[in-house]
Image 1 (cartoon, rainbow, N blue to C red):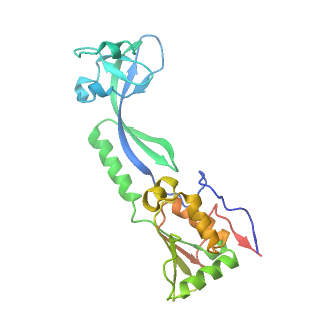
Image 2 (tube, helix red, strand yellow):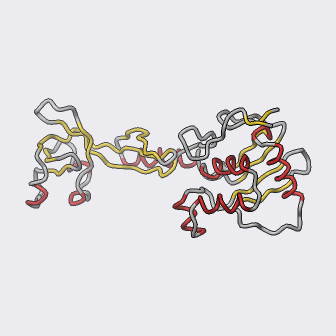
Image 3 (spheres, rainbow, N blue to C red):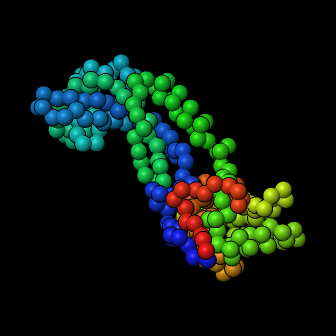
Length: 248
């Protein structure tokens, strides 16, 4: 059996298991304009003035550079910070930007105009895409015959001990499917070094040395990168668009 196309070996923006958002957080930014016909810019207030409430930022004149802004009216600004700010402007609006990471890339979801609104948005998004939804059912067509037989053999061996390969197959007795419990996800270097004291390359080599078929390793890797915990392969399940298919 030959693959109709190659499963990606590394995390890419096309990982079909990727869902939801990571590292949802809020950044308070100042919408600043000036008199030099420059486009408006969005900058954080410097840490030295981060304690100021919104009503002491909005509609106040400021000094700014490419990295931060400082309110110049009614505030004491140290000389070393003053020297770093070459532009002057006016804070038109305080913005609460909702930021996320998608497949390790930073993205801007949207802007709210109060901290409470931004917190409510983060709460809703965190719930809807949270960790309770970490189970997938996909077609066995995403496995080679070798990989499927390997899973069935491992799942049917009730006396086998955990292998330390960070996945454990289990049988589904009411159908022709087989499942995998993924452990220690996501399988990023940072996370695996923290919990296993080894990078992914070491885990992958151990899986290969233990005789795990490459097609299975590739599917489990993509799923684990997306923080999937339960992956079920069923001949009656739908195929997952973007994931390698194996045919005659």
